[in-house]
Image 1: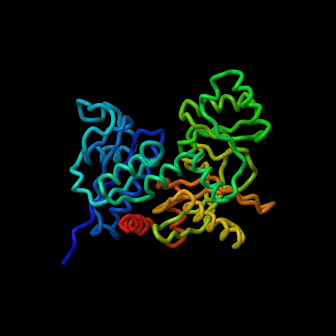
Image 2: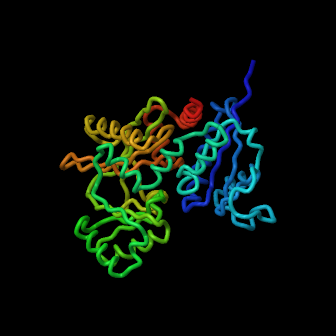
Image 3: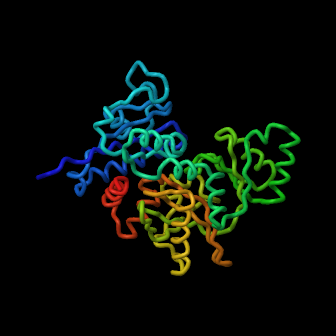
Length: 353
């Protein structure tokens, strides 16, 4: 006797600077859930969150997918409700499992995960703790340090540290002494390289701090290192598995937002040309990183590798990695032997464990 398909609520968009990337990721995920291999298994219910945090029903969500862009006020049904989640656009009981495809704050940081937890519904990806710690770079790095994982030197600070001129000058001097140039300034709670700047002198450092402070009250400054940028994907819940290691090479000074999401500006080598022992160390580090922040389901772990010294530094973990055509997470699993339709099916299965 045939069973009814699992109704999967795919939530995308969001009140975050990574709204556009989320739409592109959702297109890939939904196409994979609707692939021939999964047609009888899943029924997709897309839900769109606009830039002001309103949740919209499948007809509006499909419009955002078809146009592959953020919908503005003129694209949305009128009159517009107040910003935020004011009512469910569908009956929550019609959704069996939630699949968040949200990047950045208000989606990747434990907020939506908490909502689904309160609803007592399974969902793809990490829970509240892993999502929140993995999103905030300062909390993440503290967890990595407690687990004894190697990281590049860094300094965490608050945006308020920039307000007093004397305190600001002391901070700049400290950063120069402890980290030197070049260094990278990052908002603590954004991904996709949004708001990140490279500083090679004091003027650039101060400008980068102000730019990051406009996006997040918590800031991070990291020492620049000359190293290869490598990534490893993790899948599973009770038992985590690591993919092959991939390398990102790019036609730019560093891997910024434009380079990351512009066709032809970067390319990947999968698997990365590495000694087997180095690949194994990175795979083990990726799983240790997940355990350190209590991440599961899906995660992409980024590392730096200095092949001259053999040093491996853990850079960061992404608990809700991108799923665009250029994204490393699905590409790494494809190279490991798990094609995209099977990957999204395994993620749904993992959410039901």
